[in-house]
Length: 112
Image 1 (cartoon, one colour):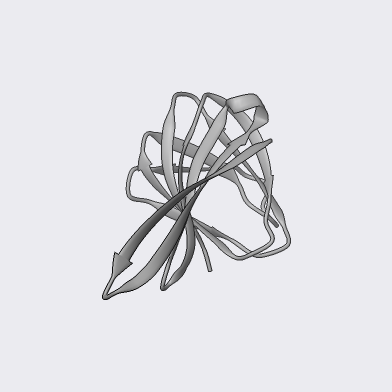
Image 2: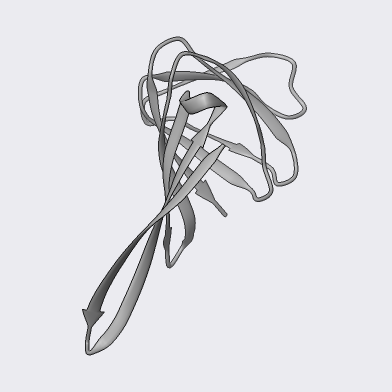
């Protein structure tokens, strides 16, 4: 995994604001994402190349498909479920799940 941070500073109402965008790369560059924070919590937007990948969670995750399609093997299930654009699935904290992409897919992952 490779991680990086991009810092952007700005002044808002005379106060210095520092925002960080985390650049994440997994599975030899096959999955890449940009992580950011909002008042609601942390999120990342990413792209997955074709393949099967297993992820571990440390927080509850909500994965929304932005483009393309992902199949997911969720904790406690034995059957892959297919999710398309606009659909979402949730994964509990401290578990793992698998996803399969047959073509590039884009996602939003919210950590709540």
